[in-house]
Length: 286
Image (cartoon, rainbow, N blue to C red; front, side):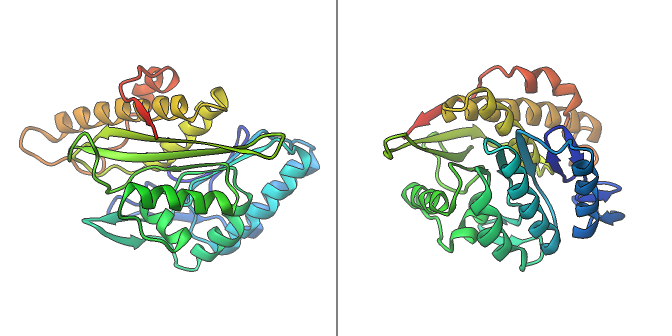
């Protein structure tokens, strides 16, 4: 799982790489907007372009991203109930400093075109700050940033990771979620949650992809209960990461630091935990 545009059960690789970019070297191709359009036209000609969900992740090309927006808008005309889940992959923080690992010109496309058509977004703290132009120093800041993101379009916002101080202590990582629903009478109900999960001392690649995919699945199962959806998502993540780090340490050998190959996520081995996770991480309603 490197990166993808997922439409229903049809998968389109936005990049076709030999391996993920956490390795020192990679080779492969990047799908451009014309090629994406051609694939979608094939689906459309066969009248198999009605979907319930769209999930997008890593891409490096602005025209590709703009084409995604056009396709999502067309799919929403086909099915007004379609849910678009966007993981706005742009960058992250290391040692408190944020940096982008995609071209900077993707930011305005995400902010002005993609996020407004998304129903669920899963930025990390740095990406949420980029999208809103607002820094997050406290939980109150994060809640206000999520309100700003709601105002841009999405009903559900989950900040998947942050460097905020966790009430449980320094060994825990905070994720925050907000679900805003407008009732028939026009009143708004907002559910906000905080999830604290144990930190794992390793650098993994693909955790954002996994989080977004599982959040899609569990919000489908629990559409009006973000607390349960996030508990199942984060618990499954913990099962996968703990299994991965345990295996990586064995492969690396005692006293050696695991490398990128050792730290490949143990997805297949975690199939049961992904499908039916034991809840080991509980969310707090704010």
